[in-house]
Length: 330
Image (tube, rainbow, N blue to C red; front, side, top):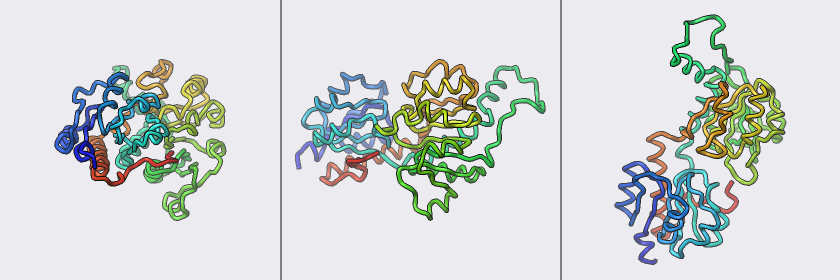
């Protein structure tokens, strides 16, 4: 085992929770980004040329060009977060660089956010909050701020992994019927527990759902999965919820449908070109928008950091990291 692997140099690209950064510094030769200014491409390249382990986040685009130019000592990219669509996995494998992530720790937090949006959009909670703050609310009236109940509606879940299943459990308690589309059908016992109906054909599911919630990872197969054609399959009263990745929804097509009244509304925590948001979305009252905060809890952030540390320690000890992203990851 090389000396650098026994005590690796670790570069962390963003400011993490203080206990996580302190522990990283205690365990490894760590350079933390305590100012939290995102690294530009030049700084990322310099870091990757002079470290054994890089700890990036979703805001860092680790593409094939950066990986090709990385120093020979870079052996591990220990991603802080579950999604790794911002990392060129094939290029990393070609260089013999292991990539890890932090799956599972943010499941409940993200499911909570999705459920909050599922309730907020039909019940017009954001509009009501703005009305109260504006000083223009003149009191209760029978026809004031009428929304739609969610009990009795059909929820269509796109992607039934950990988060999709956690959303299904919450939604069932609210009286929604559960429909889902996934690459692989769940075992019958899980379907029974969730009261979930499988749709092998995504198009067919979109035609029966009243609310559609997206929980599939972003990859080559899912980019623009919800495009103009598929939005056209949804009925006018449907609400679209996205807490996964912005690139899964064709944002231009979504805006057009919302402006034309072809969808009832949307709840969005992620954006196609973050942090830029289409100004047309900002002008729509029936869109609830949050700043990619689905996993933003203190508990979740610290748990993610601990998983990063576990992966680095296992690798430094000469073992396979528990959260290695294997070929075929979706």
